[in-house]
Image (cartoon, rainbow, N blue to C red; front, side, top):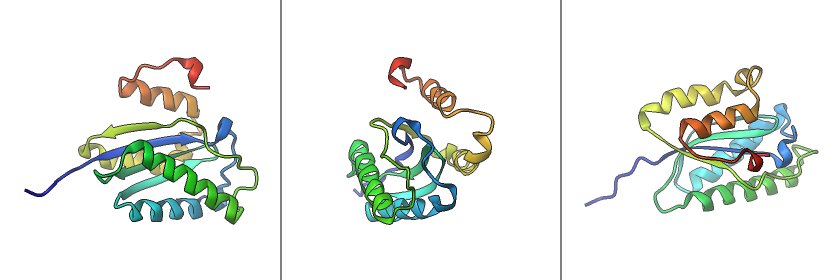
Length: 148
């Protein structure tokens, strides 16, 4: 029998110290780079977007790849790309942690819309409030001291 999977994940991670170092006019270059990276790992990117201090990625993850390894590869490769191409001069790296939320395929279109509209969303909601809401929505217990 063949293997059939639908492993849809919503990843969220921030710049180091949540500093606003992702320059809006260059972020599409970063997104294209991450898209290429995911494609090379047999993942299907549905949507990527972000604002000055964090990114959201909605992707199918190939079953042979662990989430922690994938996030590590994205962060290390993107960090190298950003520094090599000097697209975000003030960028100092990514935060140590990340959010990885398994999602239902039926939620895909809603999540694509949500990620697509990050700029508008963050005119009203801070990253920290958004992240806490995601943790609560997915029933993940957390200690606020470790979110800083």
